[in-house]
Image 1 (cartoon, one colour):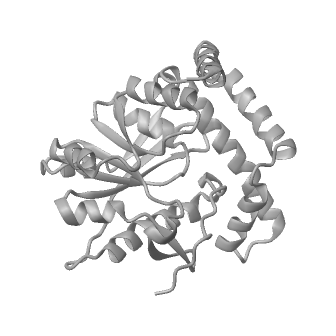
Image 2 (cartoon, helix red, strand yellow):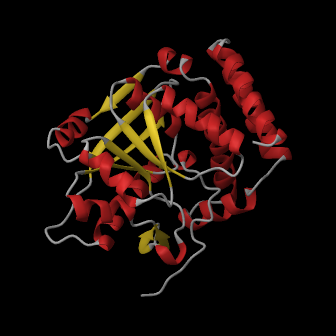
Length: 286
């Protein structure tokens, strides 16, 4: 690592130690201040996010759209602060788990589980809950350009039991996870350009990664959709749902099925989605 990367690693370690040693009230204060500051003064991809929200909810006015975006900033910052606050935040949080039997039943088939999620809600705390509760998980992760932050994120995830595979790694690494009856986590919602499959998302075509569908067709490992939502009382709800697969499934039908499930969750919690992705950048015509 170069000097900048080493500094990033040490700085993240310092922040993590600090956040683990303060109370929830102080963490909430940091979240509010940071979210407000970034929204007003560091509006990175703010225009992209506003455009995406309008595409998804064309019937809503700008006042509603801006309110959702402001809340989205808070969710994103909370997701990051919670990540830096592991393990304290896991011990101090209350979790409501819906349909855990869906996950347990899938694991009982001894084929591994393909757990599909998105950049939605408190996905870092969601992953930490799985690891802390004894579920062997492995996420397919985008390697960060800064080696310091990449190492910190890797070590933190490993601390609660989640291993990781970098995107573009040999496919046999992912197949090994399923063969060992572990949980393979895929956040399958970013624009996949020409490598993806075209599906409908809020009435518009978008290109979505097809890895989850391909893994299922190859291994018959059960497909489950799961996200974590922030409740009004500050607690967290994690939900597991089986992804319905038709008798003769295709990459398109499987991908469309879980994309629709994500869309429904976003409709219920519009501020939980990471609208800063250029979600509709690619439009591939069949």
